[in-house]
Image 1 (cartoon, helix red, strand yellow):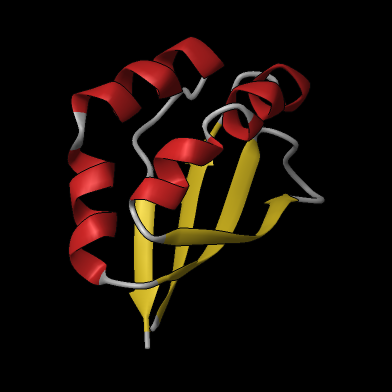
Image 2 (cartoon, rainbow, N blue to C red; image 1 turned 90 degrees about the vertical axis):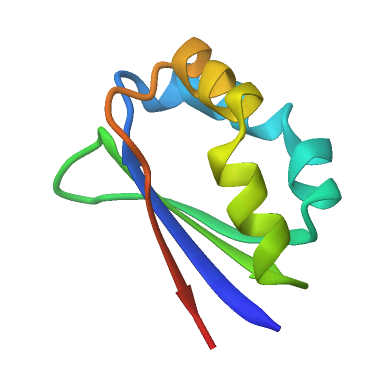
Length: 87
């Protein structure tokens, strides 16, 4: 199992969070288990999300999907996500 960290900027955390919470089915389908969502204490627009991942391929496919890109735009993500996968 891998641990995945995804970091990205958001326009407004309070507006972004319900979009994230409402997209749990997509993450589960990709084999992800939510471990935590963190807002940078020095920059409220900087979000870090941590997951357990059953398989790396599911994570990669989800991160590249057009559906996720659209969801992130709707949620107010203002820059590309940076994903880090660790073992």
